Image (tube, rainbow, N blue to C red; front, side):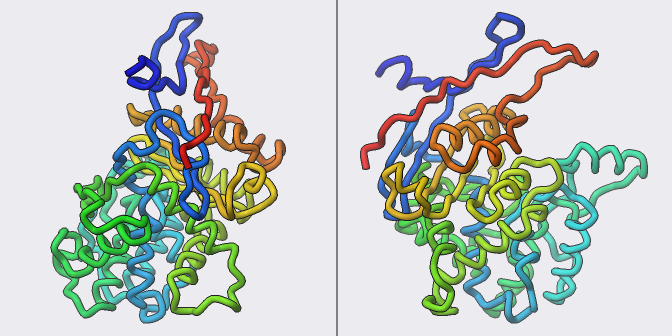
Length: 358
């Protein structure tokens, strides 16, 4: 095994002219047929998708009929797929979802934590605010699962445990939509206390290619009860309400606003990211049949590096216009300054995509 294969360095952080950190990463780029078009590092790395798997978990809830039963709209669905910033709109919508589902904050099995937004954190400190379960960045997913449990006639109690009927259903749905057998997915416990899947990185790309492919179908030609319709609804919810998927100034929100429905993107904790790009002339030029799915894993979980690489991958693949990509260029070239505002270093990206095995 060569050094590059053993540790595929995708980015290097310099302080002055000295190397401070190197960051290994893996990338898989597939089309809607699942063909591996481009890769970097190990595109089959078993990866904990973490919150990047939320659209697949939400799919399981959608397919219970819970959205129709409890009157959830697309904004609620976007929050179910989100890792939100605990802004007031996120907390209030969670409360509204719980009320619609005839549940309460006490039923949630996620805990409160410091918000992902620095602005929200400063506001909480000024108020001496103690966050509860509705403030969790995953509260929308949990509220959705409480609704899903009721929709299948299961108890609210222990909805988060791996053996609960809803979680058994979620596990099968996640495996199925990623084109894997049930035993092809490993499961652990996420930071929010729900089961979280691990599977080959290219399967995460496959999931997002399916999301983007579904969005490209004519609604009139798709059965309202089909999986394609459910995936299209998830795509539409996330891209129509990107502020509920993340929050002001966050990469997912900025990215999806810039592309205005042309792509969907979702972060996963500890360095996972996935993007689904609708079919276009740009995807066709890459050799894709239909939509494109991109999955990325940064080995050390560094989110600054993750976002820089995700932005750079879109540039390498020629997705979007230069004007669109400029909208999130600050993520691609993150400023590095000390407490006095003096520039101390820079990030150098060395990730170069190679043709996949297809």
